[in-house]
Image 1 (tube, one colour):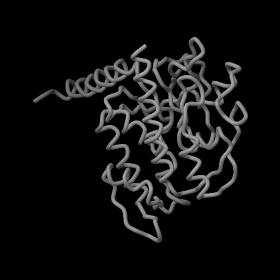
Image 2 (cartoon, rainbow, N blue to C red):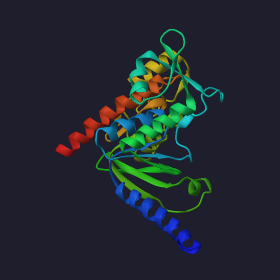
Image 3 (cartoon, rainbow, N blue to C red):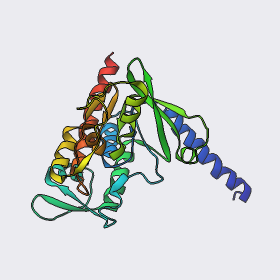
Length: 266
């Protein structure tokens, strides 16, 4: 039996060796996903399932975005018929409710999405904030990361970088990565205004439709999904219905996979 002091060293060494091995393996990525809400997690799942090297970075201790809380902390969400193939593929439990709608427990759904994404091979880094992007030759080529507590405390600590062929802004309502790219580099985005148009008030049906419609590449190497897609294009919020988020994540994974494959071909 190990001595107590040796056991404590073993625990610390195991975590340090494992973590830094994981971080080193993600210094060059196919896809860097910023924001661990449902669209980002679903994108990570489909990209990892397709064999791409993908890391998801979320500033919170518990990735999952707004899905954890359901509606006003009533921990249930609604998913419409169109998104049910994704729910079924990811083995989430559900029950019918009303015409073309289903109820899903929000805690079960969020945990299930994270489980399936990591099982497929995606790497999740929690407590990471993305404070900037890598910008080379007119395209986004990675992310600049720091610990969330460092930024919250206002400490002057330099960041690290993760290079990536594609970057996904899945930061939700604030569209943080898109704003940073436009502001710091003086470029026009592929949006109606050339910048971040800003989110409109709630229209659930229209918001669900346009979440998927607005999911796209908005600048070379930079993609948007979920509420960030609606935020950059000036469309509506939709509240605690999540089918559009799931479908947006699946769509953007396909678009990013095409861009990665094209980059590999040169």
